[in-house]
Image (cartoon, rainbow, N blue to C red; front, side, top):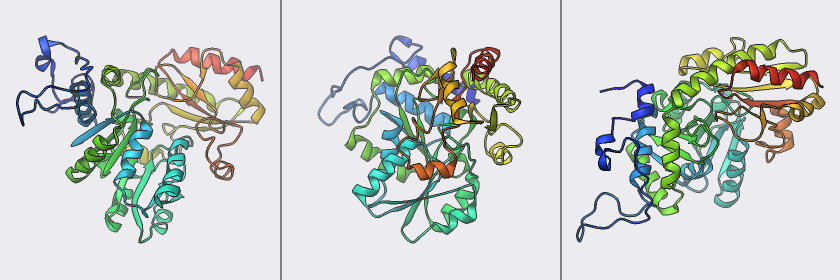
Length: 383
């Protein structure tokens, strides 16, 4: 039976409760490093937890069901997931990337360029003509975020698929900002999808996790090989916590999106706010593309204040909204990308993208929208 995504968040591909010991409704935490063999050359299906673990396997099956994947690997963090994707590329590979990426992605790409002779070209991937011009004989992959972090650029995944097929490239999509609840890049042609599971999938700002999803058997085999070899696997306890978080993914994201739409509309009316970047606003340049390839706009908002002084004072005056890195949790967080998430990005690149001193990013939680707006209002008024 093909369940709706709200049901898949609770049960994954099927209700596994009767398969658990004693009929446990929640998956047990198999807190063990190794598993006994029933006999010589005989396995229960689990041998060593670095390779596979029953708790983690249930999480991986659940995320696969949500993304429409053949296989998913659960990693110790989102960065571990990105590292795993790089493992399948040979030294000397060239990758064309969205110009606006999470700063940690840029950092790991810089390290790969130095150690493995990789090269990266950053381009506005919402422009397919510009993107195609960047492809060379050494290009092996397209790597995109949509919406992007933090300027909310939207890339047409279907167009990127056409480009990837034309030049026989891998298409890798970071789907963290919308999560599988709102967007499924594999169904639009992506070869690999990565997530920081720390964010919306976990949903409570208490667990680090990452995922690599694919619908190709050849890629799944390669990913699994490097996964067990490098050992960046998610622990059984953290797997349990992420599974628990996913059970409320649908209700959390619906509430977060509802709040974000109200806050974005309110921000547009404020004299000290110059620009609002939210893909759910009809005036957003990527609104139609995002609507065509997703089921929602999510709950990430960026905005530009009238001055850097206003931005800094707002951060200091907020009482309910927490000034912190990360996103996707039930608590609303505000981030200063210039100093936090994108501090390692070269200053000239930040300036080009508009990640300047007056630019703030908001991850909207599930609190009452009126309270969040009230907190933003009092902080802006005290400037």
